[in-house]
Length: 92
Image (cartoon, rainbow, N blue to C red; front, side, top):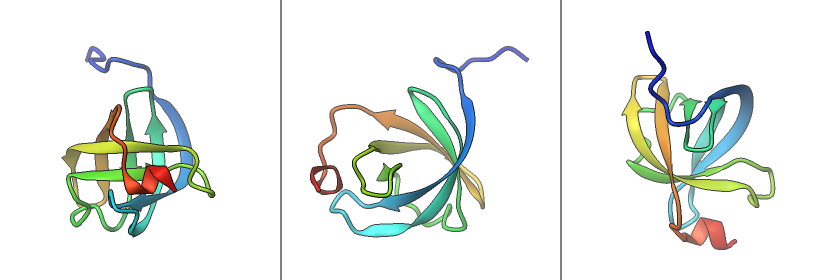
């Protein structure tokens, strides 16, 4: 099957945090793979994560991405990174 993604995915298995736009944390996830434009996240909260959220990729929150859910299963979420979306979580 031909690859249709816009950018190459890299396997990372990195623990990250999920947060609402207002900065309230939603829980933890494992970033299974990531690219410039999106990621695949593993989390027990996959069905309750909102359609838009912030992915905190560093322990201090300095490295983060605003996400839009592209697809989800019981334990995984595929997200697209949305550019130029300032949020309270990103300002902290």
